[in-house]
Structures are given as structure tokens and as C-alpha cells.
Image (cartoon, rainbow, N blue to C red; front, side):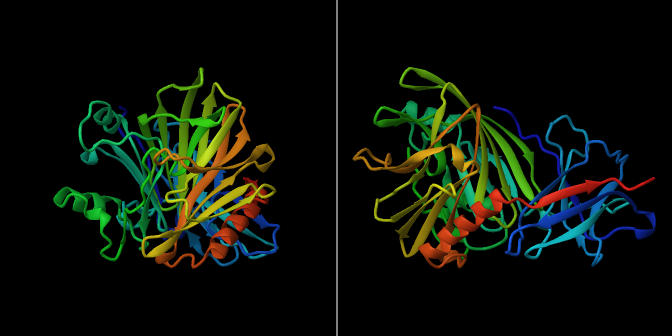
Length: 393
């Protein structure tokens, strides 16, 4: 298994104004009649020579300095590939931002690592990720081998597990530390939320499958991971899977997973070889919830009673035109009942999957949750328009 490799540069909201110089001007336009926030702008800064300096994002009109993050996606250690920031853009309007090269104070303030993921060897070999609204985990090869060898405590699934948090601060490290002292401690809600979401062999929240006749074939646990980044705007990582069989077809699978600040949905970019169709699933648990599907907007929803609260799961497809249909697949086989969206795939499929827990206070009803998915889809279909201009020397 690969060790965690990531690069993070947190840019703080202060700078030495006298020593700053503008390297880019970025105009962001909102064409929709709704206000936009928590949507991440990516600016390619590969050609900008930092030479030990930093970058800041400044609203040209208000002089506000925005929180930003530099991510090195190629993993070769070169500082500065993509600059991330999240502007607030009113309906039918635009705003301009200056990207300044600055001599800044670089301090690693853990309170700004709001989007976080890591490999968790102390709990077998989970991989967990979170932002200020939601948290997830999935399971590695040691957990799989324990099941195959009949060892108690293993997990065999490529499904995506949900951790139901109801605080904005990070909980992953805290909950695992509690579990190390008291086994299963994170199954109790002491005010921050809990892990009461059963995934089993289901698809959990957004796992993939390939339909074979009337059944679904799935991969096993991830085999390797690579952490790309943690920071104030985004956490990102890659999971690899052993080749798996779908009724005689050999399927190759790799997931690039990203979770941004302020969002309930994790972005999945899944590379698949060996199939031209793929299904994305949401577990139906007790099959006592309500299913909603929207082909035109490319999303599906499952809203269910959940212990002393209610829970909404959802998938939003990045390319609704590729959707073939939906399947409310119910079976007597344990944990294999899932709501699926099936789509054509040519090498890569992109979708967003996540949840909203009523007890967190974020959503109060199925209607609230479905409106969120619909709005998310509308924004995906009408992305913020970004125009980048290099200033004259």
C-alpha cells in the first residue's frame, strides 16, 4: 500500500501590500438568477514562478482577501499547479479578483484544514474524508483479508460509508481516537454525531457496480491509496482497486475523489475499463424510504427514516445525457438492495454523491434535500464562467 503523499499550502488573509504584485486578473460571471457560493474556482498557475513566494486572491472591488489553496496535482513536488478559491457571486452578476504574488507569512494553522482526508491504519485500514458538513469512509485490503480469513472485525465492501456529523469542525481524528480508547465509541452520539450508517456489501453512498443480466457485480476493497491534498477548500485522493469480474468481463477501476468546503456531495471521477455501462448506487437500508429520480437534471434521491431522525442520500450525474435509466433494485440478499442510476461510460464517469442528515440541521425534509440536489445539478449545468487575463508588463 502506498503511503500518504500530499502538498498543501494554506494562504492566510493577510499580506505585505507593499511587496505584492498582480500576476493574474480573474473575472467570474454568474449567468443564473440565483446567488452562488461554495463553488470552487480552479486557476491554472503552472506557469507562474513562485520562487518561495505565495499567492493571494483579492476582490478587486471590496479589497477582501479570500481564503485560497494551492494544489500540486501531478505529485512531483512542484509548487503551484492549481489555485483554488470560492467566491460569492450574486445572481446575474460578475466579480473580478486579482491574483497577487506576495511575500506572506506561511504558518500551518490546523483550524484552516477544513477539508481533510487520511489513511487510518489504527482502525485496520480505513480511508476517511470530511469537510464542514459531512464525513465518509471506505475500506482497504487488510479489512478484506480479515473477512476472507475468517478473522473477526474485518469488512468486505467497496461501498462508501457515511459518518453523520452535526458540527462544522473536523471529527475524523477525534472519533478514531475515542474508538481506540473505547471500542465502538463513535457509534454513540455525544453531541457531534455518530456512525450509525450501515454499509455492508451495499453501494453505500455512491459506490459503483456493473449490471450483469438481473444482478450487479461490484469490486472488493481498495488496494492502494494516494492522498493528494488537504486544506481550507478541498481534500482530494485516489483509490485503486484490484481488477474484478462482471459476468466474464474484467473490470479495471480507479477512483479520484474530491470533497470541497461547504458541499454535501463528494465528487467522484472514476476510470473504468472493460465495460461501456456502469451503475452508481445508494443503499436502500430497510427499504422504508422514498425514492425520487430526475432524468433531465441527472439526479436521484433516497429519503428515509433513520433511527431518531431522517436521512437523505443523493447522486448527481455530471453528464445527464449519458443516463440510461434508474433501477430501484430490491432483493432478499442482505445489504444488496440499492437504488441505481445506470449510464453509458467511455473510460471515465463523473458524478457527485452525498447525504443530508436532518439531525444536523442542514435539511428538514425530503423536499429540502431534493431542492438541494436540483439546485446542485442546475449549477453544474451552468458553471460559473471564468475569464483569466494576464496584466500588461
